[in-house]
Length: 126
Image 1 (cartoon, helix red, strand yellow):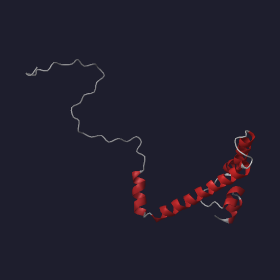
Image 2: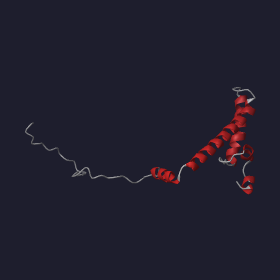
Image 3: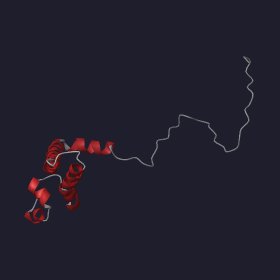
């Protein structure tokens, strides 16, 4: 990432050294201050000890960094896939909304809105 763009990234993303995950300012706020607020609320409700105020933001930061490392592995493995395989995968994954295959296997079917009376068969086995 160029130095100009790096300067405008949120401090949370710069401190964690995120390369592939690029959270915005609101998401970084929720990751850090939201985790602190949640830990304070849990501590005030006496569901956890006050250590959670320190531990929960650290755990959230570790999960965000882990997610960035997984994204790095996925990007590297996708780069190893040959172009021919990528094109084949893209063709298979194209949405086909609005298209349906019609076969001519059924012939002489008449669809009407009028009710049809059942006809009696002239079968000698009846």
